[in-house]
Length: 388
Ligand SMILES: Cc1cc2nc3c(=O)[nH]c(=O)nc-3n(C[C@H](O)[C@H](O)[C@H](O)COP(=O)(O)OP(=O)(O)OC[C@H]3O[C@@H](n4cnc5c(N)ncnc54)[C@H](O)[C@@H]3O)c2cc1C
Image 1 (cartoon, rainbow, N blue to C red):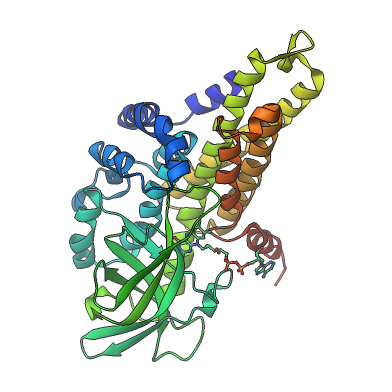
Image 2 (cartoon, rainbow, N blue to C red):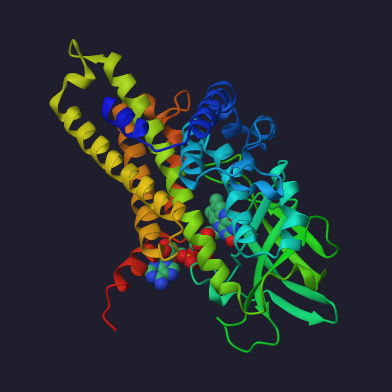
């Protein structure tokens, strides 16, 4: 395990970030990991874990200091996501989902909007990002949610599906189309809706394969009225905001996937070091060693790319869409492969719920689907080489 430990130790974090990461590790050891199996079974919302996360003030990691946060580097945020995902993929998703939803606010909102919203999030509020609709998934430009200006207000009609934490969010970052712009892509706009707005209905919660305690729900908007101040930037700026948001959330999904993969790898190594067959520890068989070699090599390479893309974002680079796609795609495919191999290394016990292996495998699957399916990422990466 030395090689992975060395890679972790090589992260260039400030002293306060290192201390914070130690606190996150303690939180994972004491709260998240011990309850992960139970939250997976019950699919209850992990409020205990959310309270423990908020007690440490971890939302502050991604909120600027002037709005009540204590912002750290993006790399240190990724490291915290990965630690949490190792311990409890659902809780890690609940926490990182707020980052995904609030990042466009940090990057694009006016000072007034930030002053109104961000201190509540720094204090622990949850936010959801609403893009997907029943007939618009991979192609978000097909969304039908409509924003109609009406005097000083905007009237919202439409519906969203699969919205993470949509039943607990204080705020919704909502994408829809501006009624006065007659072009599918150019009409996309971004507004903020507050919990409890009249005409907003939270629909049923899905019963999911994995990350079962991180809920996804549908939302219906029926003549929801919000003040025009809730519009971000200008009508039609939504696509720019969406692409920028995805560039920051895709590395976060990769960190999450790599956390699940790392947990599966470390648990499997511990198991095959003590499980015996034919009078030898399983790890002594060459066929098993070959499996480990492939797993750890790909893990180390992918983790290295995670920190590289994180450092690019910390350096303020904006044009990182392809790097982020490569990272999200490879990390999630790897998480699926490593968790599947880890089940194999546990033999029959890997298939049983007394051990975490089958949970890791179920938790990993969705990482290949959300934040752009891996088919879409392959398409984005491949077509970036078309010479114009
Ligand atoms: C657990 C979970 C959490 C989620 N959280 C959120 C959230 O918080 N907010 C939000 O807005 N959304 C969320 N989503 C939605 C998620 O982002 C979408 O499910 C995803 O983008 C895929 O869209 P879709 O399900 O409509 O699949 P579809 O787009 O219908 O795709 C079905 C299949 O067709 C393939 N396909 C589609 N188009 C192409 C193409 N051009 N080329 C090749 N293959 C293609 C896809 O890769 C996939 O294999 C969540 C989903 C889940 C399951």
